[in-house]
Length: 140
Length: 93
Image 1: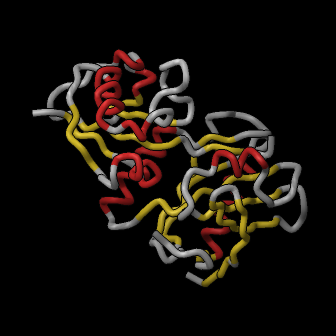
Image 2 (image 1 turned 45 degrees about the horizontal axis):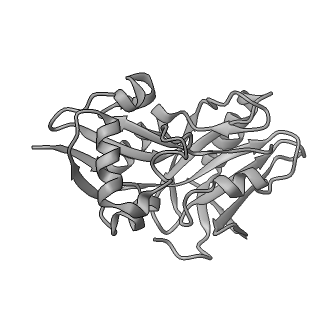
Image 3 (image 1 turned 90 degrees about the vertical axis):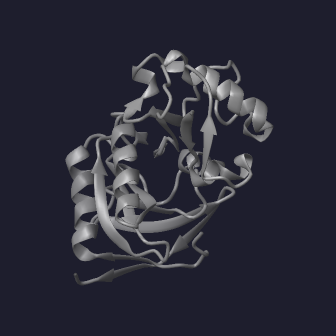
């Protein structure tokens, strides 16, 4: 399990993929999975349909979830987190996000479309306690 | 011979740290009943308080989400691969 305080590392293209996924999902929340290594380096962003089809909640498509887990495992990688958008509120986990955060080792990325430029932030959620972590953007 | 149950990280504590176990049962309902009896710490994590599939736990037999192949009556055959994955959900609400 990754230790707390690990930075989330992604490329600017991966960041753009998350933001574009969330913009395309409007007016609903957009979402997807982060595949990478336990040290917090993202290898791939996997966009998902929001099967909740809602502007206030999201749920990753269970088919995408299974496929992403299997493909990550085949490549020696892991699902290390999830991103979703808040369309009209800040990039901070809501009470729903905190209650439903299943995995203390995951990176929970929030994309806020309520402000310009788009605000992208990453959090760890452990036993209901939210801690923001740094996002290091590297050039691919 | 039996089916294999794959256990996600967040549920492993209730399964004494195991990542996969062999399970018996002709349906998902039978498999879960047998698992619950063997691993009492899973109580409330596999089924909801009414004994129905848990809203926030996805269960797959091979590639199929059991909700679409009969729910608790979804058939399980020898050699099947059963995967548990917590739903990934949340939102601003």
